[in-house]
Structures are given as C-alpha cells and as structure tokens.
Length: 134
Image (spheres, helix red, strand yellow):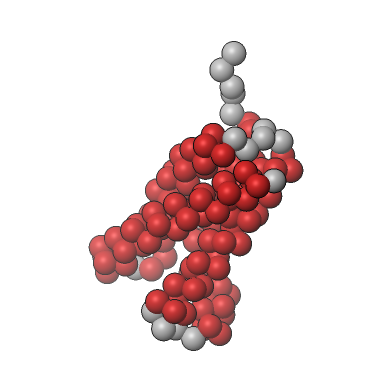
C-alpha cells in the first residue's frame, strides 16, 4: 500500500504544479478573451492530457499493481490531496476566506474544473483498460 500512496501523492503534486502553471495562463491570457466558462473549458483537456501522462509515469515509477482496488485508492487519495492543495493555496496563498472557497464549488462555473478533477481521479483505473504489449 505504501507504493500506492506514494504514487497518489506524487501524482497529485505534479498535476497540482501543472495546474498552477496552466491556471496562470488561463487567468492571464484566456479569461480576458473568452470569459471564465470558456477559459475553463479550454484548459481542462490540456490538464487531463498532462494528468494522463503523469499518472502513467507515477504508476510505473511506484510499481502500482494493475488491480482496480489499488488504482481506486491511488485516484481517490490523489483527488483528496489535490482538492486540499487547491483549498490551501486559495486560503493561505491568496487570502480568500475558507467559507468562500468551499462555497465556490456550488457555482456551476466551477463544475467544469471539478468534473476534470473527477476524471483525474479515475485515470489510474482507466489506465487498466489500455492494451499491454505482448
């Protein structure tokens, strides 16, 4: 189980770092030109593509077993860590009140990103469906 949690932590960390970079581009470049909704819609496929490659890399690096239970744990732990990191950055980094950060998840504009984060959590399981070389 240690390799599963290590893979989850590093998966979440790398995706969070990538999201921080792409989020900066989204806010500074896309948001003024397209609005919040379309900026999010444009960013999510790029984030999920990066998450896919990061998940493959971390699964291989930490030798996560090719079993659904372990992959679900990896995705679930990574999801919780990613959400916690996002909340911590908003509260401690940007000084937003915790209540505002949590209540923002009720905004339909936030649902596109949240949906992407749910797919992020399921990627380790989805990778089980890939063909393996003979």
